[in-house]
Image (cartoon, rainbow, N blue to C red; front, top):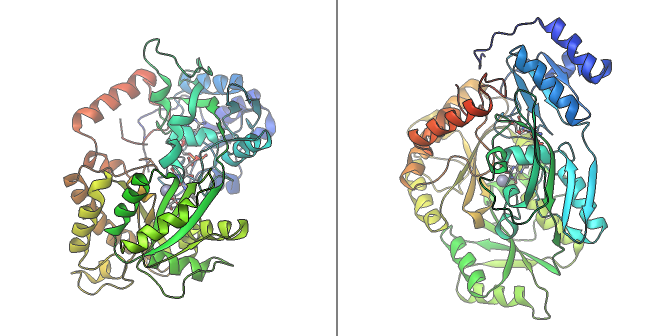
Length: 487
Ligand code: FAD
Ligand code: MLT
Ligand code: ZN
């Protein structure tokens, strides 16, 4: 698959030799197993076909690599932990994969200014651990935290499970260092909390999916750690009750640190596919909501909330995690959905968002569109048998208006036929989403998988400005060609 109009001025052999002269012989990989591993991300749909993998150690290395690729019109695909879900880090067209994995130093932890400074290749979990070590808290949290890197989080503007309270990646970033397409270094790596001196350019790079520059360092915010977290899992009979539960939390002035949901289909798949997963409920419910709150005082806020929710008929059952093991177990029921789905079958993912007050009307229309309610496992009334055979698995960061819709089929099903069937529904859902002024990507990004659908969310004028922006920062189009849009 060709994504770019670049005409490389050197052969692959010459390029590899030169790149080795920058980073050292062993840090340019060309073996077929390496090309396969590093040329793809979690999506595993596109055939990986990079030219080579280059592993710089310093910003200067990155600068030299980009200057060379720029001069010689070589496409570069930035690569983090490769946990991305939209094929943003996929190299399927002879690209130089530029991996930040060796740039993995935490450079400074400032407990007074509440900042942490790190190279781009530091894993998200390592930042959390470093903050914990000094009694502080780094709030970005996602199930892929052990593998994804802060550079990848910044490039995707990752959301995660704590966005409702602390914001997403963008809100944690105070400064970044970026290497531009021509190799020049743009140092915006300052730890200022307030800085209204002109345009704040760092925000352009956050969420730009490696198409505008390579993030090499970042200064991020730290927080005092939350006190006394309480976690409850609630059984809910109808989707329309979920936003109402959120309203009750707000009216009770509760500090909600996570508000997640999943359907019974998602729950059953985790129980079947994830070793050790257990449900606290005797009776299966159509929906489950996981609510985590900070309860710093002596008042039993979670108990009072649950009482209120039972009295109002918004929940049918609930359990509060009694100890840290149960806390992890309940979180696992939500966080292990992605891995359980991957073990269960072929998966195509949507990651949509809506304004909170539009969630329930949207889901009602969605059910009409599907001809089935979203918690049933098998469909009966959808026109096409191919579509009918898909399992729909919904979950997500519902407190942020973010719904993950997953289309699932057994592994034995013909992959092309599976993708085509899922696409049929997906397109209808995106049309419906446009009517509700929602987004086709809440947090995963556009990458290769969703570029044809960008128009459902962004106006032609917005896309035209995006193209102008890309041309300004990367006039030759060497950075991650084919991602977000084609030039
Ligand atoms: P990659 O996948 O390696 O790359 C992602 C994009 O960033 C690509 O376009 C790549 O070219 C670019 N890139 C990477 N590093 C750099 C850099 N240094 N400079 C410039 N560009 C760069 N996402 C969420 O938002 N919320 C979730 O809750 C969430 N949960 C997940 C759970 C699981 C189990 C999995 C597998 C994924 C999940 N994701 C989630 C998706 C993914 O983890 C995030 O998008 C993450 O931010 C990607 O980081 P990465 O380092 O793996 O990046
Ligand atoms: C999640 O919320 O678990 C992630 O975004 C991963 C996914 O959507 O599968
Ligand atoms: Zn998510």
